[in-house]
Length: 138
Image 1 (cartoon, rainbow, N blue to C red):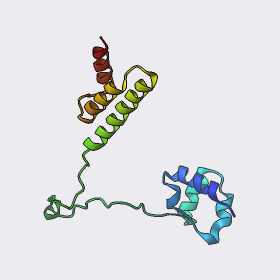
Image 2: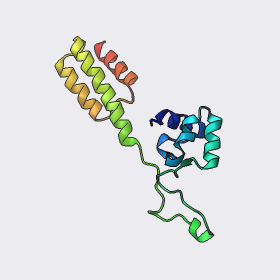
Image 3: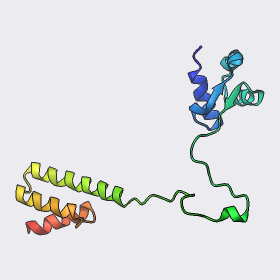
Image 4: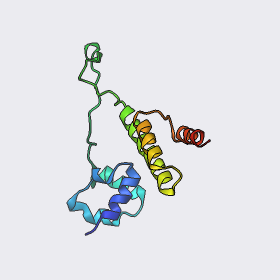
């Protein structure tokens, strides 16, 4: 018996992912009859549909003032995104100058020079690079 559509309906009705929903095998006939969100909610109350706990990193529990103190290694900090920002900008600028080279707007020597400048992070944005190229062509 294929209950994938019922699982989708249940995930929408209950606001959880499909992976967390489990149908009780002995009550599959009841589940098959459910066609509305309200039917699904009633099945959860009856125990025909079970919602598993969510997986993932546990949140910090605060029980006493002694445990409230943050110690290094206990709490994950936000990851610094400098490298990701650099990669995104560099790839964008390199793609742009490659397109200019293939169109014939810049020659090979200028292309190499611009690649070095991109590598050394001399341009803040694509607009900044375009302005620089305009100034060179004047």
